[in-house]
Image (cartoon, rainbow, N blue to C red; front, side):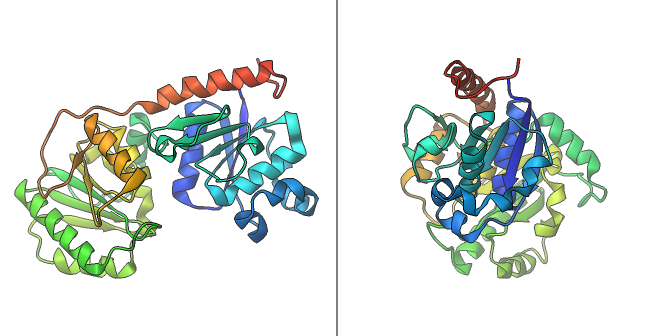
Length: 328
């Protein structure tokens, strides 16, 4: 099996966590290298293959950590995966997560969401996003939280709030309507509330939250970008989770836990994202949030284990083709 992996990241936490998740799933050592992607490679990743000699100097980090594989996530990092593979050839295997929308032959292995409907010999499909933590990680993370938000003396609801995305930009009215529904549902079960915004959540929404929950009779706590160390540890004390539909990564992560998951909609979803959520609900991994919180017979999404078997099998097939030498 693989032994040492370089994870290349531009610092985007969601993308980085996907790469870390895969390294953990495969049980290999890894080192995260954060770089600022070259503008040309970021927007035209294929050029890294044809004009690799122009970008070699940017790969100073290759000598920092001995590696036999590269993992990247997202189109803007795909160019560096191509670049390193072009230079190191059979010495490494390059694995890319999410659809780069370029020639798949640039990569040894592509791991893409099933709803992208892309197939190929070197493509493995996933339902949703990879999860970078398990229960032991949650327990460990919770111990590292030096300052707890409040005393967990009541049921706790954890709201993960997304926002602007490629499909739509929710209005402030959309946020207000949704947050009022959340407030009523939390009050209905006499619970505390933790709200975590994302980098896609407009800053003004935090002000709206403070106004709406100013007189909330139970405890509520707002987590912003500076407080991300609360996650995933806070899940240890979470009784119900509400995640907005645009946050596919977060929905996937919570679906891997025993916590009742409710998917809330700031705007109506269509196409492949809508099909993704319907698939989760059909298999009892989630419920649509309709203003009420309740316990239901939730299944735990265990795709990480399934993916591990598929990736290992595929990597072994590469070694037989002499495309990559697998360490014993």
